[in-house]
Image 1 (cartoon, rainbow, N blue to C red):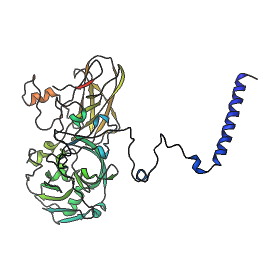
Image 2 (image 1 turned 90 degrees about the vertical axis):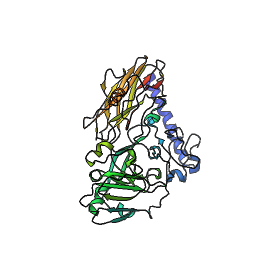
Image 3 (image 1 turned 180 degrees about the horizontal axis):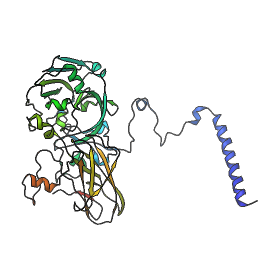
Image 4 (image 1 turned 60 degrees about the vertical axis):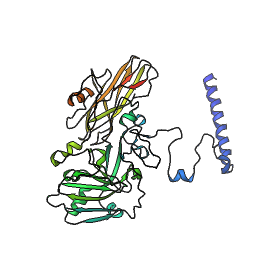
Length: 414
């Protein structure tokens, strides 16, 4: 008998013995079969009812803009999402950024008592309960929201600090156009004023053309109810517009014939309905999330550069990456199918040679708009090229990351 046949026979014998052992074990009481809980996550009623992430994952949001959240009185201010640890394009609800420049307590609203009123220049003034809103045809769409104050400074060290005031979620609700058609917008109704339930009333003025286009009254976020910090039980989503127009805890919409100056509109004045949409629009914009500030490449070799791109002008059409400080560019791969006014994941295979270099990315949207460099922004505002750029208004300029020869990554903005 060959040694191979002998080994095979011995293997079969051991397998039969093991099978017999398992058969005997099956006859023991069920309690004897319970696994040792050490190294296991033991089920609990809470975990069955609502799961949680692994204890080994610690990605978290941080206060943003120099003000602590919460402050001594429990008020929340800006809170930034951890883009450096994001994968895909959807921001988990618990990690979605929060923007509230004046500080706010989060309203604790009973959805059974909440009402939405639509009035002003309409044929029929209407008041809806949440139950009634849910009876209308719904839509589910992927959209980003971004604070207009989302900008990079030389003092910022991570992508969470430079770009963490944007997030992307799957939103579910009823189109605003459906309710406005139900109410009947009268001639001369060119704007809407949307108001939320806040200590300091949050309100924004939006062109009625935008309201009738793609705005959503959202009660759902990432497959569940909108979180309280995001406007529970109802928020307005204005795709592609600055975050301040996406009114949370929505309670009232008034159709009006002129631009209304509200608290939220201070510094966002565009009273011409024909140009307001472009004036309020975000992007195009992109940022490399890996490798990015405060991360480290352990050694030369292969890496996948990855990041996020988005635009208020529609879909992302192209993303380019430079590994030499903007002197040359290569097309990045777009991961998945780009959606209008949504984060889009991009990546590029790259072999780092261990020398100091600078990474950049730039986005082009479907309208042909191209993300500008810091130098182009400086030239636009007639600023000296040898001094730090002070971006006025929205900042969608290119973010550079410098990789030192030891692999440490730094913000390259001066």
